[in-house]
Amino acid sequence: MSVFSDIQRPVVVQARRELVEGVLALDLAPTNGRPLPPWTPGSHVDLLLPGGVERQYSLCGDPADRGSYRVAVLREPDGRGGSAFVHDVLAVGDTLRVRGPRNHFPFDPGGNQRTVFVAGGIGITPLLSMVQAADAAGADWSLHYAGRSRATMAFLDQLAGQPDRVHVYAADEGRRLDVASLVDGPAGRVFCCGPRRLVDAVDALSVNGWTVHTERFEAREFGPPVWPDAFDIELALSGSTLRVQPGESILDAVEDSGAVVVSSCRVGTCGSCETPVLEGSVEHRDSVIGPGGAGQTMMICVSRAAGPSLVLEL
Ligand code: FES
Image (cartoon, rainbow, N blue to C red; front, side, top):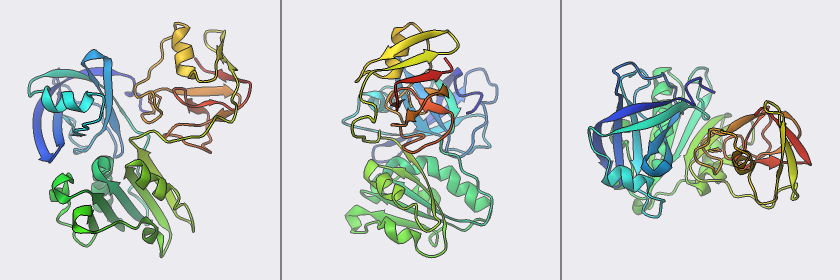
């Protein structure tokens, strides 16, 4: 995790531009004139909006530009108001705070592996800088980009110079993306971001030596937890033990105890509540580590104990 990930900083809206129908690009510059923290392809920031609203947006500008962060915001008519605020209220010259950057979707452009990028709609945003890095590294890459229509698909203009590598699937032109056809031939790796159905389909492609890396904007769907009962969590740093009830999240239990922990999306997609696990077995029910994930951390907003107790480094 980046050392910058929990730090909030004020930024000013330097520019805003409608990229395509319903997608707005914002350039956010530091208010103190100092360089912004560096970021790598796949990173996102949290925008901290009025009323305690937080939204995560992938960085889609140039990683070498330390003078501003660029994000692209899709207007979500059925959303909870964050994108509507950005589209309808936020103006050039306004200030807001950002947290991050944080990268749970890292990309290494090196090596000779065949690399297939799969984007659905606004899912192009974390992939754009990966595509540029892969191209700069001379990698063997292709991008398969699906959307409702070209009029709604951001960054097609930036990608137009690579017609042999960039494949556009606009539903209103009758072109449909068959993800299974992407993994024939020599094994390689897939990087995908987009709507749940697309990412689910790509996640199922981890076969024949292919590795799959995905990022989700929408929470995964899960059945009942493997440990359906209450469980205990010991907070190793404070020495207290809390009981987490069925239907209650660890994050809620910890906050109710008065402890302060960083969180943002609360649905398992942003990674900000990642917490070290010292003992116990975890059922990962988030979209960052995901089912079957190993490692020594968990997303406490949605992931749960897979047994009667856990010890967390909190
Ligand atoms: S708060 Fe976003 S993953 Fe937990």
